[in-house]
Length: 301
Length: 301
Image 1 (tube, rainbow over the protein chains, first blue to last red):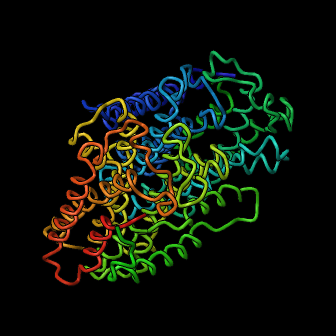
Image 2: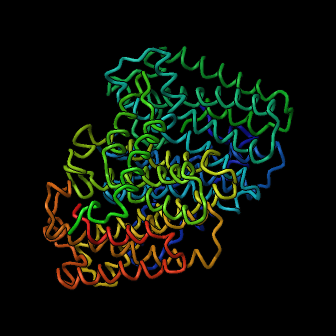
Image 3: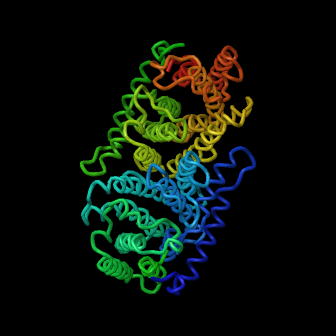
């Protein structure tokens, strides 16, 4: 296992993007000086609590291939991060995964209360679309409408929310490898796919370029999830920052319970290599995207 | 009190819009034949359970002033209805208002479970933006992006979600009339305002026309909410289809607890008349919008 420090190409960009996303979210979720304050505080608590910011990095790295200005890509990255954080807040609720630890701190409903957590999630979901649809994100309304349409699909019943629903039923459903793969494609793959695609949409990439990037994103999404399952099975809670061992305790099928640790790790590495191969047509310009794929399977958090 | 039948201008349009919205939601939330089925079933249970469909009617009536094709206005209406239903689902949760009855049936978390209710709400929120951003809603991407941006603002922390947060704190906050007015402007007014504005945006209305419609929507939103408070205080649970008497039981300030029944009713009637006056420049073409304002304060459900 490794941290971003051990993947040198990623160290600086990852830190820079994380700092920029924090700066942007600080602007986008300002603290009002009135009775609405509690909701904004809760949104900030969840959205500005660190995190790898891997999704914004993907948008920026993908946009970089096509000359998308960083300020624009950062806004799209902030939007997808709002959506990602919303899914974490709602998934952590007592009626869902009932988690009390996230990014090394109490989950939002523990730090505040359940009602505030539900509403902060809803407000972050709306904020994601508010950011995307605003003229500052891209001068072309057609691009903004496409980004919005694609993100809404990736977030909804045919994407992230649908995947979480399958996940909740997974303990009973005794999924096979195809079932787990489908679940994860929806739950985490759809949003990762959007990130990589967003850079291409914003930069006016060709259909062929988008096909290559889609192949990369599919392999990356699965590799990332298998690595997550490996962390759940054998990671260090203090480093990962969330409760581990939950899949096994809940009797859930995961890549690790189905394949075993060794085969799961080999599969993740293989998928990361396949992801990198899809980047071949972009040459060295895709170095950061390649580094993200290697980081996805080497990370310890 | 009166039903739509007693406001003849509204009887036919309201029924027609309700039927069309049901037809459209049936298409937009198709039942898949796989393990995702449960989430879609839950979305349909909540979204296709009747309801007045007043918000879609507002979009269509406002769009009608500017020649917006009904099929386009219906899609925008379906989008705002998805968002409205999402807010009802989440507001009904045990951690929020803890309601077991909605539109005369068990609330979603009672009919299914809490986790499904949270996710169905999230998926409906995403679906609202998916509908709006799709080319079928309007040929101009600039219009679609503007509709999306405005709806996201109306839904988020500075709109509906923020209003619900204030509402949750209202029992402790001992709000005065200004406080209750502000709360309701966010919680119900923002979305009603969007509906009226959406028709104008889709039809390319002038700035002056939009100002008139904004005045109408502000009066309508407050009138509608006072009427809601009056129903909560003195309506018939079997007709209204949800639990009543909750404001008083929770010690919440409402227009009725602050003004008393008689003054609240006079205030609602006055606001409805003011709403109608804002429609003066549109003449008879605004007959349905005027009828909605009269219905808002005369309804028994």
